[in-house]
Length: 456
Image (cartoon, rainbow, N blue to C red; front, side, top):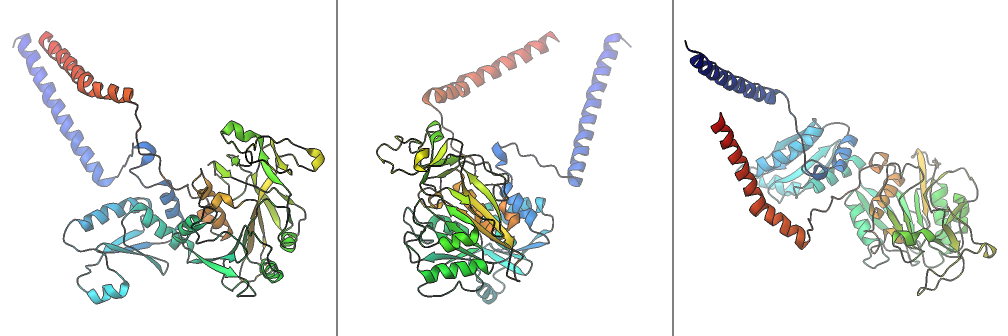
């Protein structure tokens, strides 16, 4: 047997052994894939996977969740729903999916309110939510409502120029409140010309920036509500007038400081009006734990804690060291022409303008009572809600006030921008790369491979 023949035989043997090893490796990978699951998402911010918010909501659901889908067995709808729900099952194995043919019992479907092919009804701890839309946002919101444990009644004081919960005006809160209602809260009006006390089963009362002095009866009703253990959100505005709310402020042990809070650091952030306070850092408190988004507050009253009054008081909104309370009127045409004047009684920052208060509830039906006082209501208004993390902070405040601590630290909603913006030069470079550069590179690689084979 010649040397060249041996070499040729060994080469063929090596080739067959390599092919056999490749087949064995592929078979082993196929076998392991049936036993174990590994999923990797390399998209930007893991867009192809469930969001961090969804993962956080699933961790708050303790116990099995059943999803019943009323989808026609014909077509691909059931397979689409199955693939969609499997992403949730990967994070929560005790989430089950069951299909029901809606054509078998049309009367039962009408009784259930099922009118859309593929409608979902989610069952959790003897509560249920119905969905007619298949999307991560809608399903996650429904799961969040179930985790909340029922609809929460939030009463908004009206009748004295407050921001309207259902209003569409620039200063109203309609956009924000409509989003809260999608998360399991129900906003109702509270007018003390029609009632003398806060109705029972009210989970939270919101006093949103009254423009007129409240009648004594309304102030007494609010003070009695707080004294009896009710939760309160009080949004106040820069004013030297307490609008008749001194007794409420004394009950809480806080004081609204005169003047408007201004910040000289705003110019470095591109804010032309020093009355706009931008925050990116927050004092530690349950509401702001892990919160890093920038928020914008257009006109702010500084707050001070004057008495302990049995409350545990924590500041969670605080201005910067270059801020102060401006007492003098500000020229809107030249708002930057202001100076700190200690002789006028102006106070130098940092200054608090958001307090979170808590104490053991006087009501036997509640374990803890919570109150939030903020020296600005504009940050949740229709005009400013979309600025930075304003909406996310507002959601955290409401979740904390309602005692839904597990939902407070949910990651902010939203996704990064999916639009790729390219200049004309960048677009030309990309086009030339695909039209000329890539084909030329393939030709060079092909020529190099052919040259290597001829040499061998």
